[in-house]
Length: 236
Image (tube, rainbow, N blue to C red; front, side):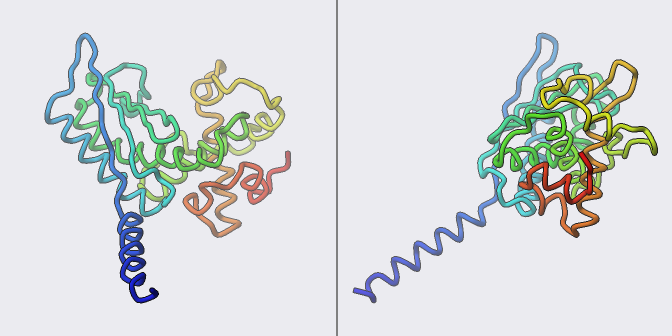
């Protein structure tokens, strides 16, 4: 009986190992507007970068879903510095918006920006498995973690990853907000002209946490916000 079972067990273990080594796959959809349709060359570029990036991130974050969905759409509601923006929608979906009229066009923007953007959004997807952020502080940690991850592992420094100015008081400002405070305006453009208050402050917290713990934003992908604040010695 034992002898007959051994080959079956061996095959099962082999299949499990193969499945565990399988690279994440990205299924890409393309929206079009009344004035723009993605060309074949643009689609090929986006497909190539998306799948290559998923393979990279999958090695760093084993919790990345094996089947990912990316929707690319033309639009003007983008970050002006890069001509594109993205949103992660758990458990496995990313929306990438690109302005075809920006800079050198879709291919140029994709070649320069898409890989790092997907590092950021894929980190969000993996982190979301432990729970989506609800408060401003949790959003700050989540954005800071994803921004640090794309900087440290994709090699892309973003303006929304720059630490707040010395003595700015942004940290105390965020910590003083009620738990149900709206995040709109704090994560992009504030009415007083400041930008990315939440993300920049969160990145500073994450950098302190990783420096003091010796762990990376990949290691801490599932760590709750309270743990990050504790590691960063943030006094609430």
